[in-house]
Length: 211
Image (cartoon, rainbow, N blue to C red; front, side, top):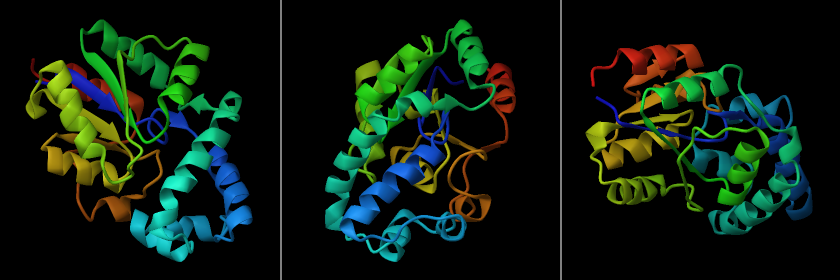
């Protein structure tokens, strides 16, 4: 059924939450935004992206600047980044099945390339990025055009509600992974096609899918 598997990067393939909090708090201190701590981060995870920005006192017109600063600082902390347990094994096994593996992320292509190279991950064949936090569906359309595939031939794997919303616009099936950023109570606002709780579970789903 699925010929191409698209992965989100942060929160899906890599555990970057500690880097995210540290880098964000550096920016928040500089510009007077609400800082993240162990008490408020749990509640923020239950909110949509727009609701989070409002509570964190971040005007939407500041988002491009924050993204630029964030990605630059993030790149300097790449040595701290690790894959979630079982991810690399899963990617290698999916690649041997003849599936095309890609990444669509709001992170920068250079950051992703650096991580994949330093961790000797060769299974990913395509990397697409979007600076627009709410525009992943546009990148999905571009990938489909480039690879000449239909939405029904793709499975997107992500961890956030905005991933699901983008997939609904692009009419692409999505598997939500429970080890990422957004919790189940937020995800249930727009349920995914599949709920995945381990890399092995995703591998089993894709191995058992009819070709």
